[in-house]
Amino acid sequence: MEPKDYNEIIKTVDLTGFRLSAVESKLVEQNLPAQMSAKFDLDYVRSDKVGENDYLVTTKCSFLAFGATESEIIVDIKADYVSTFVSPNVLTDEFFEIFKSTTLKVIAWPYFRELVSGTLAKMGMPVFTLPMVINTFVPDPKTKN
View 1 (cartoon, one colour):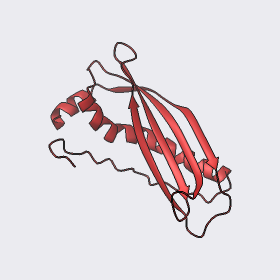
View 2 (cartoon, one colour):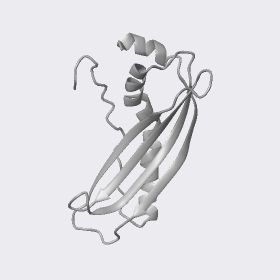
View 3 (spheres, one colour):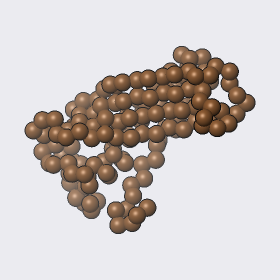
């Protein structure tokens, strides 16, 4: 999709709802190892149109703190956020690939950052502050990378 085409469509997309729909957290190991690492991820599940012009997208977020290897799990936090959008345009798969790499990250990420920070504090764990901005790289559709 050409940038000008994407820009024309995005102008017609309005966020009409956003909510936390599921959260799960586990403190697996309370004895902290000398070395701790963490990783986080966001994934998106798009449902079909839920109304004449309404679209629903679930952003699945995960945070994992671990010891020397990823098999030494210390904390596991997962959350699902549901966003509802309205647009008179059909939001194609091609549009959605760009939309999820840019706009959806900007919507869900601050809420997940706060959830992770608050949950870690309530678990009595050292607070791990996630970065303010998550990568919003948009791959060039003409290349494979």
